[in-house]
Amino acid sequence: MNHAIRVHEHGGPEKLVWEEVPLPDPKPGEVLVRHHAVGLNYIDVYFRTGLYKAPSMPVTIGMEGAGVIEAVGDGVTDLKTGDRVAYAGALGAYAEARCAPADRLVKLPEGIDFTQGASMMLQGMTAQFLVKRTYAIKRGDTVLVHAAAGGVGSIVVQWAKHLGATVIGVVSTPEKAALITGLGADHALLTSENIPARVREITGGAMLPVVYDSVGKDTFVTSLDCLAPLGLMISYGNASGPVTTDLGVLAAKGSLYVTRPTLNTYTAKRADLVATANDLFEVVKSGAVKINVNQTFALKDAAEGHRALESRKTTGSTVFLP
Image: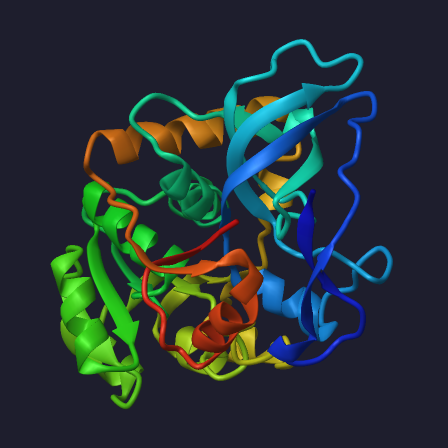
């Protein structure tokens, strides 16, 4: 018996249908994983609504999970039946069991449970490349993080602080402001404030070398206005819709840089994937970064999780339990 959440047509959370699906056999290079936990991420909403196109329909959405290998396909040498594994970036996670490409899975170390594993692979590895590679945070930097109480944002806040930065977090409510202050944010700003004016005040007019922005359309110009000349705007999500601003604004605001990075690019090579995951596991095991799973839902109730995420009622990470 195997069940999955499938999307037959694009639309709202009500389009997430729980149904029985065949238990597949792993093809060469694949393993069969029995999920113990599945992560919820905003990219799942994009696939549900059709903003991101699935290879075919109906589609089982979900990019992240953790569980135990039940079967191994031909040619797989570094994983075996019984291994505890986690992954991010392989579409099809909203299922009790699924086949996944073995080269996208990493072994979960002792001390990291399935719930943590499923909740932190996509968000945590995204945070890793954001703070270590897209912009390598240096001690003494001041950085700004939008949606700082969210899944990636709350990890970026902690990791940036661990690397020696002064961290400005932007959130929507006083409750979320208290949450990110508890995570180490030096300044918790509300979306209702004049963010560039507050940044000017905090930095003594120097402004910022980098802004981390997963909100998209609603915050894009605000983010640019927080940067020092030649500063870097990292746009890594579209929670409020895609950015359509003319590039001429970058010249007008100080020869600014913008990048739109993805985890798939940064972990395309197996060696980079393993190194990124291991760096994440180490910083979590050390206690410097805590993965806060603040919401759980039964996998069959995935629609409830989507509604909570889209209405900004979630903080930290959300996990579905099969």
